[in-house]
Length: 287
Image (cartoon, rainbow, N blue to C red):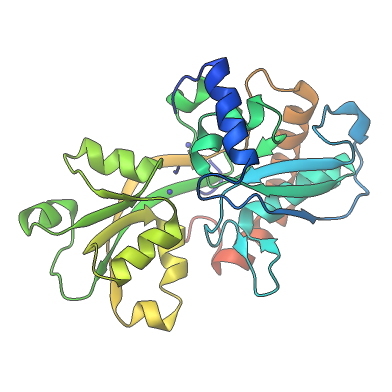
């Protein structure tokens, strides 16, 4: 599945595995499509030549879509979202454009995408965890995340305990901290490759309840066809925070630029504007 402070979506990976993972993503394997989109306009204050970028003049971002409202394709096919707007601030600071690469989330969270120079950064609603820190350098936290349970109406369940007692079918997105959390609670949920497939499984009756990041669930429930048949039955305060991921032992100039940009955006109100744009509420008001 955090608002400016440590979900979603870590294991040590060998050089051979890294190369294999890159080969997979480059061939369009996994749930990512390999689509690329450039956003933002050059003109920042920091010279791009000071930061070591995979592609000169571009800040290449790996992500996994759809994960609305953090990153998804709008009606025109452009990749947009909260994470996109946040990284656009960094690109502007560097004086470059953001280029987005859509690849499998497992390749991102393992660190392979950055280690093999598939991208400079990863912004994919990715929770900071000690396990992931073994292979990824994280920025300062930029979003506080909690998990939520979305169920078909009428289950009578209001907690994980109820799900177990009623023998309801639980689903979760693969490679996520939501999946990890419910497994630690003794569940063995059906895993789905991405959030869209997870929601489809709920709609098709393959799952009675799914676990997903709270902002994603709230975004789904804004759609009448979802709200008519499904409801959020509980939120799970897991104390998670999202971070922007870079390769291990990342370029210090790039890391410093990211952290300074996040701090400035919080201070000058830009972060709050982006937050309200995508969530309709100010930081700290999601529930």
